[in-house]
Image (cartoon, rainbow, N blue to C red; front, side, top):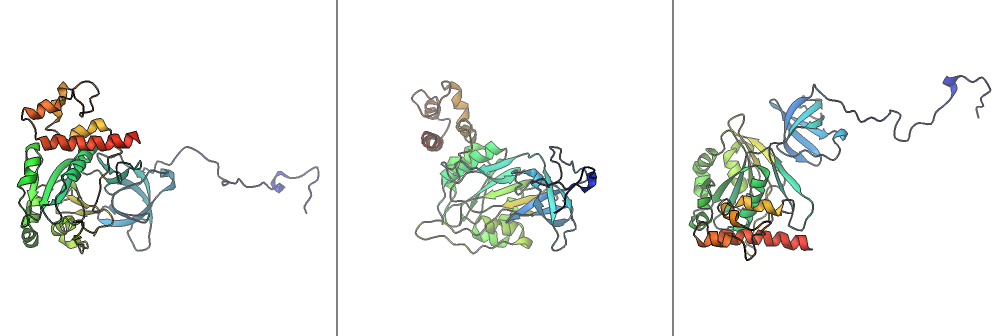
Amino acid sequence: MRRYGKHTDEDDIRTRPNRKGNRPRTNIRPKHEDAAEGMVLTIDRGRLTCLVEDRTVMAMKARELGRKAAVVGDRVALVGDLSGAKDTLARIVRIEERSSLLRRTADDDDPYERVVVANADQLAIVTALADPEPRPRLIDRCLVAAYDGGLEPLLVMTKSDLAPPDKLLELYGDLDIPYVVTSREELENGDAADRVRTFLDGRITAFVGHSGVGKTTLVNALVPKDRRRTTGHVNAVTGRGRHTTTSALALPLTGADDWVIDTPGVRSFGLAHIDPSRVILAFPDLEPGTEGCPRACSHDEPDCALDAWVEEGHADPARLYSLRRLLATRERREGD
């Protein structure tokens, strides 16, 4: 055991290391002004595949970002090995400001929101006209999320060889929402992809839809060189499909600014993260009718002006029913 006398040298004295490390902590974070710009293409078990210039780079989130997570479509700043070579790993040190954000919750009772896609310009809501049957309530919920997140909606109806689109067009035809009707034969010969592609020029488009509607089949037709697995089927008992896409993936089209983002099929689209007062934004045919509503109107009470608005023929009664169904669902959640 070493003992020190009266005249010990300062260099001889041992110090106990800091439990959290020897380097002093600071709130100052590096600016990484020399970081390269990239776009997140997909995420798998904490590893993010990013496009940096003309190559794909595998990266992980830097600790300094804390709990802030990057999602598909994010514009990010990266440092480290950006060669894209095998077994190399870069670091994402900054997530740039987002122009739009598509969010959802698992259901209306789930307090945790899930960010699906960032920076998309357009939301393509894909629905089959039959096998499985269309679900207008899910379409309405996707519209709510699109308007809330700053995305323009596009309605894509598939399997028109099994059923006509007339009934859905009656519900959404007067809302100024662009739409495309496709059949399975048109998907096979490329005609459907060509028509859909005209709505995608110069845009980043996220594709959503419940399982079995042919969403990934359509994406494969749009981007044939990056085909995704499409072996799902529709359950004969439940009328619902099996998920064939398990993670969101951004795929380039012909132009530098043309991207499609395929997302996993959804069986529910919760709106717990959205203020109920914003739900009306998904119903532009009903919104003008709220001018005569009393203050803080829930749009489901005797003095609501929307009843008279519908009776005067300005909107379809089914649309008002959809709005009130959504609001009633949220009210039940808030009252729990």
